[in-house]
Length: 241
Ligand code: PGA
Image (cartoon, rainbow, N blue to C red; front, side):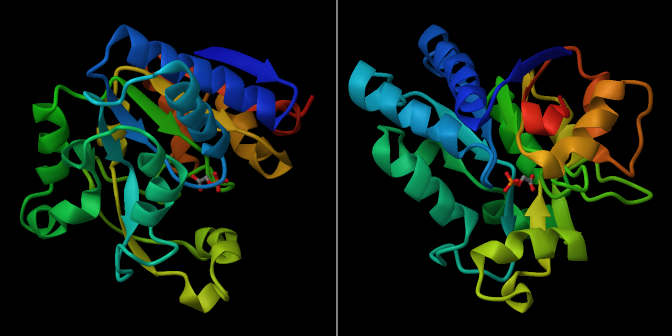
């Protein structure tokens, strides 16, 4: 695992942005795995700027988002469809046919757990998977539990995650209780994992990853230790130094 320690959020985002931009320039039909949440906002701003000012071309790029809430219309201001539209897609020349979210396969996933994963596979697999870390160590909505799902599936959000996400809703009760999330296998099959973490509340999860000794379903991000190509970019607050 390559660990890049940065001073603060802006530098973390810049370094991540340079990596993602470099991939798209080198492989114009790159397949990106995308995350939502506050963490990747600076990375998406970098990509928008690269498109608007330096001609970064998204025409042949394909994206697969990690997760989406269930029981929230995709037009809802807090849906991940809306998040991606507002922070990246509306500003770049990506084709709507190349954008994928797991909830669109929800019926198929109910019948066949491998549906979303099969679609990723047909697209050639994910070249670069962007990941934030939950303060409880989750990746996508793979919450700490005795068992973790391999394929994309319907998940129940933990109180800690609903509380963390309540800042985007008017109350914690409004945060959906369920989501559809890429599984651990879905994520770990990406060719390169780009994990970003900033801020003190990520320190515990980051230290379990940096410690590098234990894989535990109690902290799902530790499974990234199994992956041959991981870049972890952290700021000082998350790294604890
Ligand atoms: P955040 O969420 O980027 O808003 O901190 C990360 C996550 O929950 O995976």
